[in-house]
Length: 167
Length: 167
DNA sequence: ATAAAGTTTCAATAAGTATTGAAACTTTAA
DNA sequence: TTAAAGTTTCAATACTTATTGAAACTTTAT
Image 1 (tube, protein in one colour):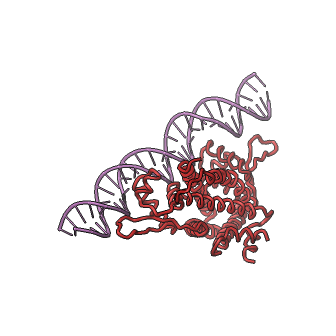
Image 2 (tube, helix red, strand yellow):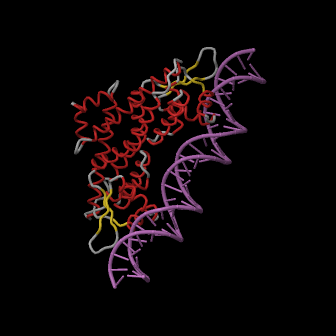
Image 3 (tube, helix red, strand yellow):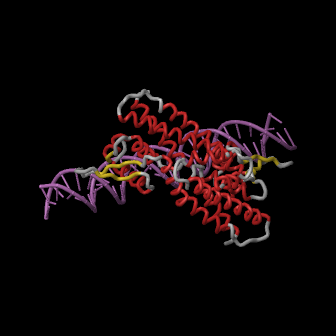
């Protein structure tokens, strides 16, 4: 496979993987592009390379900056902004995990906590509901804790975690 | 909160959580409904409770059966099919993890494996690409292994995993 | 102050997903 | 068989989310 071809294929696949896991396609692609670029890129270059509009590029670059995985850079003497991806994949995954926990899991947990304390009544249906919502709350809450634990090791947590799990 | 209200709220929240994590809303809701029902439900009952069409119910019930987390049941003397959710949350999570690995991660890994062996050339750009795709391949592959490890403990893996991670 | 260079916003639109509903199909009991 | 009961399929449609492109805005150099 030629370099150009491999690169496109890679950007496509990474975008698809992203969107299956709840990160929008363009965002995943821009990130991937910045990841593999030896130099930081301008918005123009991102637009060109990925064939996307200015608005789209702007929105998603900002999104990436909000997630804390892309940074702006200014080159001396130049007016343009350049963008650079966090180069460390572990830290990238860690940041995504933290954000998703904060944005999605924690709010859902709040609702579950609330719902499981409904005005109890002795019907079969209500009892089962109580039991299951409690179980599910426990489960999600543990999963969230686990995510936190895995991710709270400073470096190379995937390898470390696998080693721990094998011991 | 009244039981009915709590139940609706729960079904809503669970549906939303599902769709954020790549499981379609209705599928997540049907599953949640079956989960909290003391008895198995007919398609009619699912449609009624969730206010969805017959087609939608049929498709998503089949989807859940494909994921292996819902089963058909036949009641003696009755012609109708009844549906029942796997009651064990750990096993549920395990099955979902296995399926997603198989359907999404493994295929992406195949592409990455392929792409990182492109016809090398000595440009800065190509070298960086080689390095990063290799790193990403390693990462995704480790993450997938980890998912496998976590999930391959028979029972109560969340708790067990947290204990391991704390040790 | 002003104009050029650059960025952001947002209404319009496109693209992608989910849902409906009715027709086709299958199964069962008489 | 046949018809009633039940299930599946799928084209049409609704809903949701992503993307565009042009106008508004901001910054910087003169």
